[in-house]
Length: 424
Image 1 (cartoon, rainbow, N blue to C red):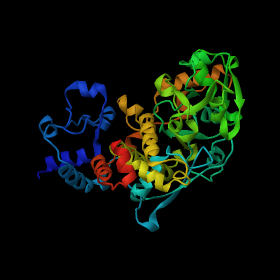
Image 2: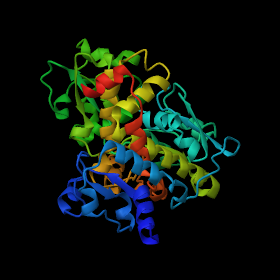
Image 3: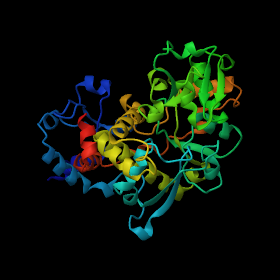
Image 4: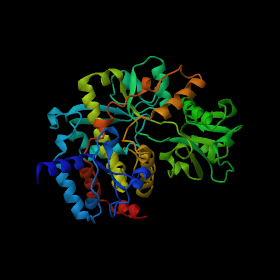
């Protein structure tokens, strides 16, 4: 292979991703490859790269065997990634990194990018030993652990992040995992309520008082004054309050749809009508300002992107991994429900990619609208989007070997239950 061809191959291994962005599909520059259902695009194009795949190459029929071979060949160049250099990947040189859940538990599918990246060795390959903890069962969603240095990365709601920053506490979001709205409401299946605006004069159940800050921005966006809806704190069985008719609705999110606790409920999720941001990965501002710590956080985001791409290629494989590894999940759901839930959460995480954005980018327009609502509610003073997030790590985070990850996903062996769920 001549140097020019070798350069193109290495670039393709790092930068090409399957994308269903309508703008790219209509452009004619990047045609649909047979059997993939989405065009191949250069992920870093928005960041200055002008690489486009050639139509003649992409229009060839690509067999599974050929794709695996090409993916394995592309993986050879993974150490040459642009951006931040890989940390030491041998066990003795790996850096410990602690991630704290915002829920006080890990028995959900929502964290599948972390479990997949752990199982496939993506964190280890980036020189990290990731510790995934349930976080404290309290209202601050694990942010106290991040502020106290007991955890490196938190995953709070935007409301909690904004109020924390407003109090002068040094936190900043560095990766927007939930690129679409997560939260919304659940109503009884037979309810006449079909729009959030119809909740005016009714009641909404939540598990804890702190969840009010999740409910109110959604109501304001829908044109309802927060005082027009009564918020009922119902504890861990808050969904049952709606199922029994005690409340008109309950706060809900994508990962709950299809779960046993949501039986008999219909979901009005924000991803279908809201434009507000949702949970993101945050760290101490001092860590993001320190060169060595920033390398570790960049390595973390790169492994997360690999986990996201893995699930994009095989939701069933991602569901099987999180089903096996997430404590308590297998006791509360089935393989079929796990696959369905991963697919739903993947839709939220991929929302930005569907709009032509790279993984993890914070969109200023969405954050500006949310911060205006927070100010109107009196929860914060006037904050600028750049006060609460940074996009400085996003280019390097997306600089991965996409073909290698997709081949990992396609080759991952599925158990019988997950094979059946995949074909359902």
